[in-house]
Image (tube, rainbow, N blue to C red):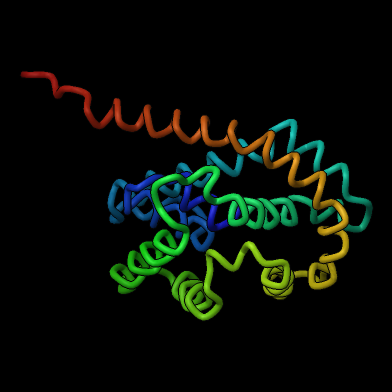
Length: 206
């Protein structure tokens, strides 16, 4: 999944949201000095990615892309799913506008900028300059994202030209998103429930 989905699935906990954003810009184990909630947010992000990669619907969608695009199908599906979520935001988020979510995410980054990695700070500036997350709903923004992602990969790739392959599979991807996303929401909810049980567990008396 991509940035918007991770922030959405983190719920209203600010540290989980920040960890959900940070995970794309940090490799390896979280710093033990970071707040527990931020570390939990990174863990949730990684569990979501693993769950998504292993889901039968996503595996089926990857097969819909012909070579050479199948090699990059995971990236294309992640980006398209943020496009689908932005377009259908009201179907899943009933109590908060997508612009409010964006502003809260940007505020979290700004409040913590003294310890966050430069790549995340650059992404936050890109978010604000391009009106994310709401502009994920626009086809031209998704094509701009594809160019940006392709430019950041280490090896030469054709992602900047992936638009036709993506839009050619749009109907299938939309149907796959509607089938898959409720499962992902339930998966994230299970994580939240387990975390809350641990946090609220009584401390044994000595």
